[in-house]
Amino acid sequence: MSDTTNLSSLQKTPKPASFVEAKKTLSIQNECDVIVCGGGPAGFSAAIAAARSGAKTRLLEVNGCLGGVWTAGMLTYVFDFNQPGLACELTERLEQRGARIGENKRRYVYHIEEMKCLLEEMALHENIDIQLHTRVVAAYKNDANRLTNIVTESKSGREAWQAKTFIDATGDGDLGALAGCGWSFGRNEDPACPCQPMTMHALITIPNIKDIKEFVLFYEGDDDWNSWQNQARARFLDEITRAGITPSYGEPTLFHTNGNLLTLMANHEYGVRPFNAKEVSEATLRARAEIYRIVRGLQSLGGVWEGIQLVATAEQIGIRDGRRIEGRYQVTKADLLAGARHEDGVARVTFGVDVHAASQEENDTQAISHEGVATKPYDIPLRALIAKDVDGLMMAGRCISGDFLSHASYRVTGDAVAMGEAAGAVSALAAKTNRLPHEISWSEIRPTV
Ligand SMILES: Cc1cc2nc3c(=O)[nH]c(=O)nc-3n(C[C@H](O)[C@H](O)[C@H](O)COP(=O)(O)OP(=O)(O)OC[C@H]3O[C@@H](n4cnc5c(N)ncnc54)[C@H](O)[C@@H]3O)c2cc1C
Image (cartoon, rainbow, N blue to C red; front, side):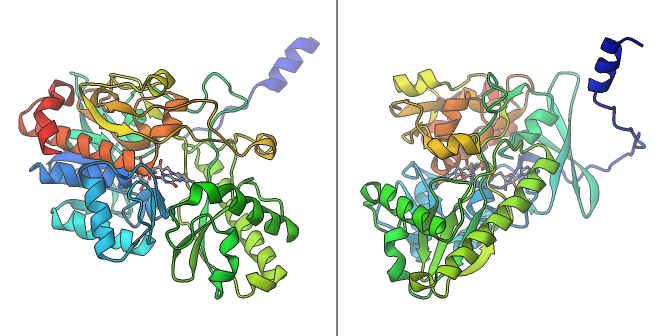
């Protein structure tokens, strides 16, 4: 054997052993008009809008609660929330429950548990058929390239579901990918710097919260946080460093949620693909351990940190980047620069580009960057929410059709709500009139959402 043959055989990745699973016939669960996969900000909104438009609606969610990153991810802070429609309604409803902090309706802090209850109450009120703890794992099309059936896995085993229209609101574009749609992820052009990092949030408590005010980005609804933010973050970083820890996120942040509770955002997990369970599991374990280290480190400082305690770490690590499913329009950086306007604009995005460091080295120089993009408010057209490669499928939230930089702007939750609302209304009308989503004109919907 020559040296070259030897080397190439060494470089070959060994093929994993395979196992062929037996085919199974699944009974189809009750049919409905619209199935929404994923119950985060986008999926919840899509389901509400579809149900309010008269569609028999089912919502399938893998977590044990609705809300996605809002609740299971313990986000506590919303951006771009002054969108008309459902976002406004959520703001009012949170306010009525005393669960919203701050005067500014565009960005504010909310209480996680109140959000959880509110979403569930609203969804039940609209008679949405909710199934939690249920993951979408397969998708099937008919000969006309129309998505007709999906399969889920849960404690009930594998179940098949049928609907007239489907909405992928899984954030990571699971349904679109399973249905065979084209998709992109991270900065495709640069494999060494593939995607935005993940972040695990945590909830902490401290008896003398006033004493740490100078380290808190958003304290008791302080709306003037722009002038304050860099100082608060820098001071907090100094404190963590004083405790002997270098956090993986170079701009660690505390948000005051309510009473003596604060949200802690101090972690970055680099280069993790959300569609690789092993990578996500390892990132989750690393992130949780880092949060423990930081809180214990602050405890060891005493002084203003006396009595600090970790209340909870997020059940779901926060995923910024996922698959972006190819749609009938792709939102791009050019749209942001031009302030694009569209006849079928379903959301006007005002949030700028937020790219978090892709590696620890990058983070050490700059943890977040706007990449020099001066965003002008721009529209997301309905076409970016309609799958290009498969009929009968819409997307909402993080997984709509866009490039890396535009995604770094429109992914915030106010826009996810507006997109979900549009996808829900269009899917419902398509189902009701036996049409496909791309056959619906936005002018048929606009007055109602
Ligand atoms: C660390 C971090 C900080 C952020 N900060 C802010 C901020 O301050 N303000 C802001 O407005 N936005 C912020 N964002 C952005 C924003 O939270 C998300 O982009 C937003 O959640 C998008 O909503 P979504 O519904 O598309 O996705 P998600 O919130 O991710 O919801 C997707 C849902 O689908 C479910 N799901 C996934 N796969 C499946 C499957 N196969 N079957 C069934 N269910 C499935 C998930 O469990 C989840 O509930 C942040 C994001 C992260 C990660």
